[in-house]
Image (spheres, rainbow, N blue to C red):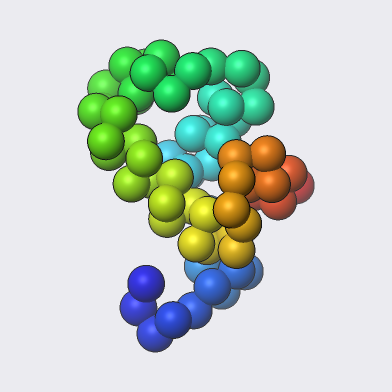
Length: 68
């Protein structure tokens, strides 16, 4: 990430928030990718960036922190 900034300095983008909402609602990774019309690989790239922004290491923590 540019300038090494993490956490609240990087706001969640609407698409990233949507991904977390899908996971919260119980969708599988494959189904989320289908609904968003992206590849599973691209979805994993989004997740990697979400984890970095939120300074977390798993989806449970990302949902808790990202959807407050």
